[in-house]
Length: 238
Length: 106
Image (cartoon, rainbow over all chains, first blue to last red; front, side, top):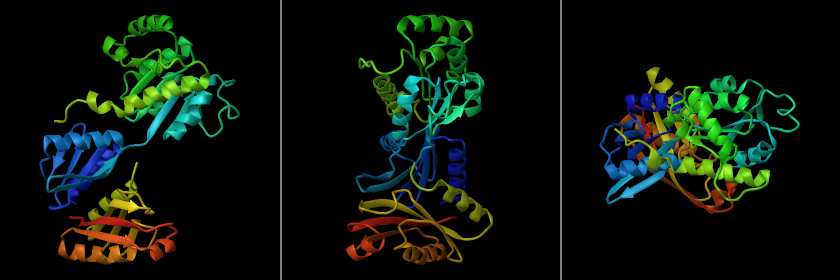
């Protein structure tokens, strides 16, 4: 591996940018692929580059064979995180499901009666105010943020931070009616329509969920969809 | 996330220190194998190693090949069949195969 390739790869990983190292097993030439472009010792065919970008989203390393070409694609994906605002009943159902799906979960709730270790064993709890708590955790491209409090005092400040972050998913619990009011407040607070359009609300896929556990399923399903279908929405490399 | 990302930081440190080194990477596996695709073993010019590409049964052979890779400056593709007997040694229920790509750090 060339020094330049190794240094670039380590810099991208330090910056938590999902990326892949592509090695041509016949020639030993290597290239680095990420959403911002392709760098390195050989030019990938556009269809191979697409394959690699898809594998980055799927977090799937392995060999890609095309004709007499044999490429090894090693994906480097930063860990997945789920940041929940509101240590409520739905969070109690959602946390173990998200952990199973591979997310490191943090719950932010300044209300001490809610965010207790008894209610949430084995979860990182933050009693910071939601905007400060979220800003400190710096949501990245591998982070999902969901607000669950129903309380504009707590949800709105969190959304102001989350919708301007690179988080791949931002969702907010609440009916269509409360969402319309929320949009008006967020516009008032200075968010653009494009920023607000990133918000998934009402949160979760529409599967008719009723119980907290079912709502957890619908939220996790929508987060999964956002994570795995990013490639079609991602800007073209270059 | 696959592999051991810290190994790549170690690799960068080794290279900056001016020592020769080779990086081995598991590129494919068949059947049961103890380390997943993307696992790294870093070998320096003294033969010292960090990380792993198996449960311990092929590391010796990989280090041996890594020394040649460092000397020649050319990558090698290694293929290891894990026999039932060896698989038993590393705690596997059945045999498998591991392909390892070894490249010099330039």
